[in-house]
Structures are given as structure tokens and as C-alpha cells.
Length: 232
Image (tube, rainbow, N blue to C red):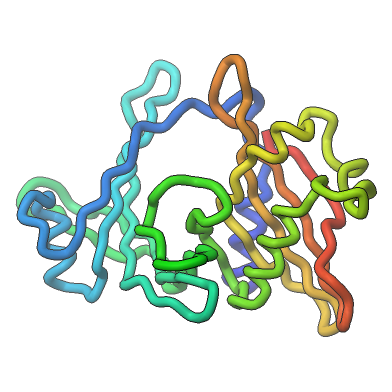
């Protein structure tokens, strides 16, 4: 089983019912920051990463807070209309004076964003120019998929797409949804398949509902949204 297959299997696993609890805000440390925690400064000394993002995890009911998540990231580069950087997960091992960060995966996510002018800073804002985590997705495919998504349900030609969406994902929520991840699903030589993971605002209680949007691309054919699925 390839790394991509394993990733898709994990990402498509059913989530617990109900809205996900809000996570505390992440914090990003840049290389050279004297205020960065010791474990982060140590990681910079042993790696070529330019940034480390730390994301605290909310506590589950009746339990202590989970260990924070760490992510390392490289420099932002631009190619045409796409800005990108490599990102990978880190894990904290040891404790006290022996604590240190290590990579726990061998593969990198290519985090991409559409840019009209200058590249947006990593982690800044949302919307059509926000960075999206991708796996096995080319820059050309990323541009085509993001343009397809921005036009979904926005024209009469997209009527069939709208009919396939879940009843809980109305037009307003769909327009406000944020694409967080795009994964290429292993397929055939004549058909490419992708899974878009989106988060749609869930008023009035707040939080976000998560969905998967499937996109197909046949040889010499356009990118098309083929199905939707709820993940929580």
C-alpha cells in the first residue's frame, strides 16, 4: 500500500458525530526567532526548515489536553500563478532536557496557494488565495481544481454539481467553505481522481462541518465534480 493510499484511507475515515471542537490557535516560529521554544531552536539547528508551526490540541471530555502538533516548513517559492512550500509533521520525543523534535513521516505535503501578485504569507487568512495542503497534486492540477471549485454552483452550467451536494451544504455555506486539503486518489491512466477536503461554517453554534468533494479528470476532458460526502 503506497503512502498516498494510506493517507487517503485515514483521511476518509468517519469522524465522530457533531461539530468538531474549536482548536486553540496555532503559533508559528520563524528561523532566527530568539523567542522560539528551545526544542524549536534545536530543530532549526538540525534541519533546513524555515518555520515551525505548533498547534495545541483541545482536551477531550474528562481528559487532559492532547499533546500539541508540530509541523516543519520550507521556504516559499513561486512558479507562475502558484506559490508553494514543503511541509511535514514533527513529533516531540523525550522530556525535559532530552526533549527534541523529529520527523515522523518521510513524505512532504506540498502546500500551495493561488497568487495574483506577491505570495501570501503562510497561514494568512482564508479564501481563494489561502494555502492548501496537497498530496501528489501538480501545480497545473491545483490551479484547475481551485478554479473549478470557485465556480461550483456559481453558474447555470454547474446545476448538476449543485444537485449532488448534501442537503446540509446550502449555496451560502458552499460559497463560504474553505478548501483545506487536496489529495490525489490512485486511479487509472485515463482517469485521475482527487479528494477535496472542505470546511463549511456551521451557524449559529459556530464551528465548521467537514465534507469531501470528489473531482474526476478524464484524458482530454475537463475537471468535473463527481460526488460529495459528509465526514461528520
